Image (cartoon, rainbow, N blue to C red; front, side, top):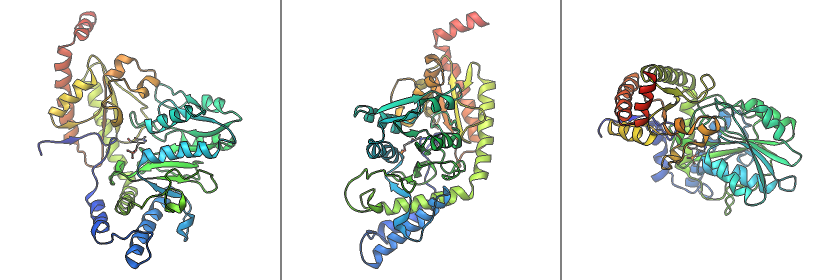
Length: 399
Ligand code: PLP
C-alpha cells in the first residue's frame, strides 16, 4: 500500500495481531456452538467465560462462579448495546413513567433510539452542554420529573473527545431513583471506569475502538434492573440476548481488553504527548484555527479543529491524496453534509462547524506522522483558502 497515516482511531482501530492470533483457533479448531453438549462446545463456552471475566473485572463489576449470574451481556457492537439500553429499558419501566433524559451531543445510536421512542409515546429531554461540550448538571437535575425512568449520557464524546462528569451524573441519578446508562464506546479502556463507584446502572462498549474486532460489544446491566430481552430467540446470554454467540469476536474482545488495560496509562501518556504536539502546531502555525472540545477533560488521542474559510470535505479529500485518514466528525455522518450536531450544541457557528477536522491518535501513531500531517495540512489549507472569496475579503479587512 502507498503511504498511509491513520488518524481516525475514534472511527475504528486496527485489530492488534495478538488479538487476531487469539481469535484464529475459534474459527476453525474450536468451532463448537457454546450451547451444545460435547467437549468441543465446552471449549467455546470456557473461552466466553474467560473473556467475560476479563471484561467484568475491567469495569469493577461483580464476578461470579456461576456464568448464569453475570451482568455483562455480549452484543453485536455499541449500537446494539445503546438500542437495547434505551428501548428495552423504556419498555420495561413504562408503567413507572415515560420520560427519558439524554444530552444533545450523544451518538446517533442513542439519539435515534430516543427518536424511535418519541414516536411511541415517550418524552425525551435533551439537556444542553457548555462550549466545551460538558453537560449542564443543573439543567440535568432540573429536568428530572416524577415520571423520569432513565438518564443516558455518554462517557466521552466521539467527535470532540470531551469526558462527561459521569460520577456526578451517576450520583444525581441515584439520589432521584432514576436509572443511569452511559455510552462508554469511546471511553472504555481509555480512562478508568468503575460501575459501582460511578453509580452506572448500564454501560455500552464496543471492541473495535480498542484494537479488537468489529461487530462485538457488550451491555453491562446491573443486577436487579428489569430490562427485557431485545433480540428474541434462543436462551443465550441468560435468556436476555438471543443468537449463537460470536465466539471468535468475544475471545478477541477479551484479549483486546487485557492488552489495553495492561498498558492504559502508558498509552494515554504517549497519545497525550502526540495530541498536544499536534494541537500546538496546528493552532500556532495555521491562522484562524480553533480547537473544539475541552482542553482538560478530553480523551487522550482526540483533536477536533475548526478551520475557517475551508470546507471539511475539501480538506479531507486533499488529506486523503497525501495518504492521511482523518474525518470531519463522526464516521457515521461523514457522508452527510449537515454540520455536526455536537459542534452546534457547543454553540459553534455553522461556518466554523462546516470546517471541522477530527484527527484521532492511536497506539500506532508516531511523532513523524504528526509532523508530516501538519506540514501537509498547512499546504492544503493555503491552497483551499487561495480559492476562497471569503478568505480574500477577510485578508482585505484584516491585513
Ligand atoms: N457510541 C459511540 C460514542 C460511538 O463512537 C460509536 C461508534 O462510532 C457507537 C456508539 C457505535 O458503536 P458500534 O460501531 O460498535 O456499533
